[in-house]
Image 1 (tube, one colour):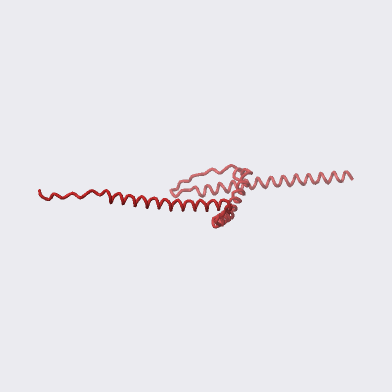
Image 2 (image 1 turned 60 degrees about the vertical axis):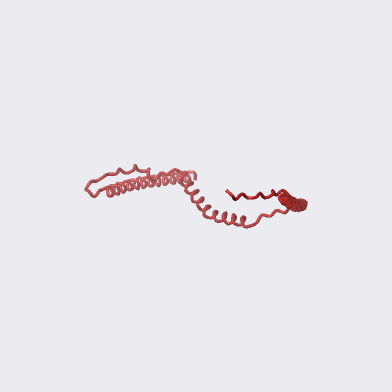
Length: 159
């Protein structure tokens, strides 16, 4: 029984080795075909109308498809950021407008309200008193002007 299990494991490892070799050969053939296709495209597109041919050397095999593993993460985060901006910006603007529309009223303390009322009454009474003082001053100035008018001097018309 151990021989059968060992033979089965040996057969599986041989099969895995054969499959690995075939895959490796197929990858090499695909790389050669891609290299030939790149050369053909480079030669076809490099011909100028004046008859000159400019040869563009193809990239070494295997270097065209090598991207750093962080590229996927960067692209993913970019698209997530764009989606958040597209969705989040209108929501933020709507919330801002809603907050701007609501008037912000703060309830005043009743003590402050009564104090403001007293100050208002005091200012009104002071303004009335100042008006009376200014009226009295105008009256006194007019009286002084009437009493101290100089006698009119005769005109000297003879020259």
